[in-house]
Amino acid sequence: MNLFDNIPQSLPQELIEVLAEGKGVTIERIVSRGHVTPEAEWYDQDRDEWVVLLTGAASLKIEGKQELIQLSPGDALHLPAHLRHRVEWTDPDQDSLWIAVHFTPIN
Image 1 (tube, rainbow, N blue to C red):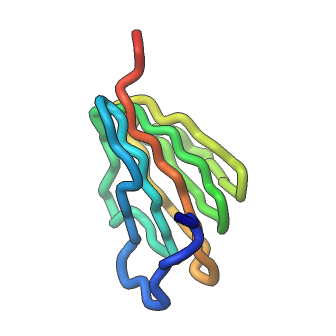
Image 2 (tube, helix red, strand yellow):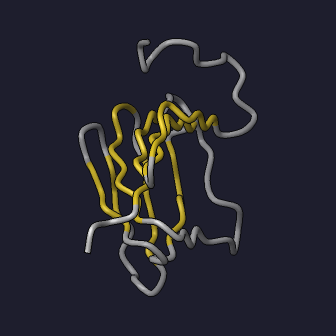
């Protein structure tokens, strides 16, 4: 499998594909092309998420923080469970390809 293959020309919705999953872990490929979190919605997940942006560009907002987090290729971010966040912007002119790992941390 090549992570950059099989991306549709037309992408009316963000593409989310599960690449692998196991006990307490899910790995996804996400492709955004100008997609953002709908207005006034927040991600509030039960598991931690680690994301890395492989191509493109994106901006994330963490609830309660003024400054946006700017991501470019190679940038990674850990989002603890229940840290409310949203995607404010992704580049509309190119694919922003993410790998997201959802997991339950070991305490």
